[in-house]
Image (cartoon, rainbow, N blue to C red; front, side, top):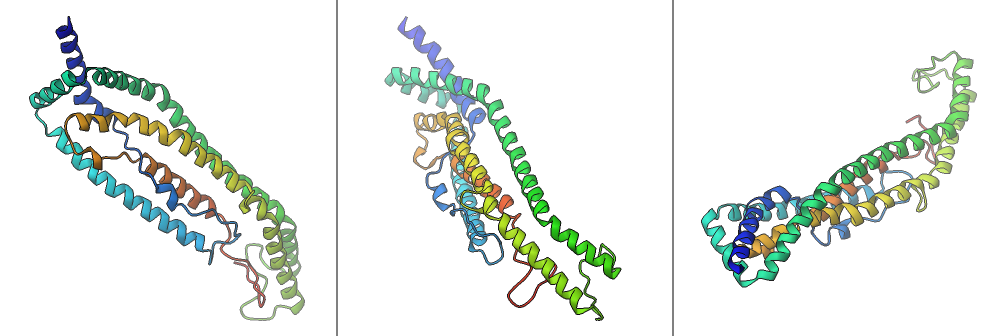
Length: 290
């Protein structure tokens, strides 16, 4: 009876070894990747904000780390795939006979990972789609809030253009050839400064430490760290044990889910924060319509 049980477990386990790593290999984990993420800025303008360069630097570093780990993983996986089936079966049998309890736990783990993948992958995909939609909605609300704050000054500018008979599509009433009345130039300057004031007043509720952008990004980061990364780590968890049983160099094999999650977050931060103005329309010396 013991031999029959062993043969059945061997056949099932060997099938798992032959097919599970390729089917379940959702690379995941690389501790320390989150440490490269810069703290979110509260600056209203992106020009001369070091956060922009720091974000690019972090993204480059995390991508490089991921690429390096994937190259290591690929080499180990190729070495594993190169093992002849008979040799793989022999190693499996030797391990199973020496570790019957661990073999049973491994098979149970393979089943659990498969069930987890099938049950939760639709949920993971739906969650990511929901966050994609929320990001778009956040930026739409932001633009709508800006438009509302800008509206009185845009109306004032339109009235000025009509008064001077300047086409509405022209960005400025000031003519390059001269001849614009001083009062009209001053009025337009007041419009630009009013737009800056409106932007500054709108900034904290969106880009401040308790603003809507940071609040939403916090929920996205929480999902990545608490759901996306652990899920992908579980899906890939059998790979390392497979390589250990086959005497592959498992110390160097790590899944890359943490890299993947951090990259998703950094790219999202870049898109969201890219909606800030580059700089004010007015300096202490002059104003422009940029």
